[in-house]
Image (tube, rainbow, N blue to C red; front, side, top):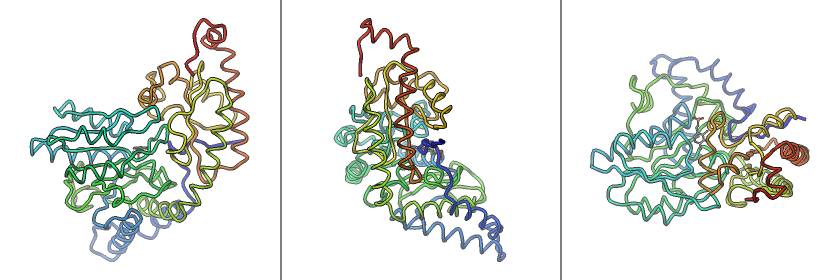
Length: 395
Ligand SMILES: *Cc1c(COP(=O)(O)O)cnc(C)c1O
């Protein structure tokens, strides 16, 4: 059996999006900036996409910038607010310890440029507290950035609550909603955010395309200089096939979110219940306040990487920590933030489901994963020490 359970890393393109990509490349080959009819047809298609994306997010079309994806959107939002703040002598940024590297590494860069960055902790449930954000906001704060849903452990953050606080204190607020868009309702007015990042390939669109919502009046600087595309805020000839395919994917993904969430969360909960029977393991993150497709565990006494390789041999595509972290020996910053010690954090497994995941696939995962965990534990000197009492169990 083959099971693709790594949808948080990237998704398979939806057939409707793939079709739209091809059709758009074929039909709308003109440059939207050209004055002739081929250009104007492309410009109209671009406008249609911008209106559709805006409508789904509760935004105005002029508040949507098309970008190359989640990383670029996060960079542009954060750098814009930071540089605008610095001009007014405000150099403090409040964010969280569990953000994606697209946010964390941008903040690191700003720290080197003299900004003060405060990363809020999360509880063992993987959720940041809105009161902690409120306490850190002061007259020097130029930006608060809190993700909507975490990419490793799936936990949902109190973004609407934090947005309300930021609005009251007149502090720009960015949310990385890359894991959330297409998987749960997302409305910029409910969230009270000034910036919101999304990425097509996380909801069945193509890679290398995304969007940044920028509330009217929020400061925005361009990272890429050149032509006047995207209201002069993002130069470069528009990736129209990608944008149209993203729009098609977003329309399909959000057509019936309650039904999608109900179906996938039932599969998630069954998988969580089955894997929880493995001795000395723990679910990472709150069992309920999490993305409908996210299952994340730590298994004591094994290495996540070995687990992934053996699962791959059984046709199971999964992940340990985040794709960006694998290949390095540092355990995931998210698992450390929820209080997992290094040894335990190394034995992590993330399975992320989609609407295509079947009951039979959940059965297969539930049968094979315990076998592989046991096999690896039987070869592990650490596990022998635990079993024979020379070390004590943490989980
Ligand atoms: C995938 C992801 C990103 C980066 O998006 P890209 O389109 O791959 O650049 C940023 N933030 C989160 C939470 C993500 O999951």
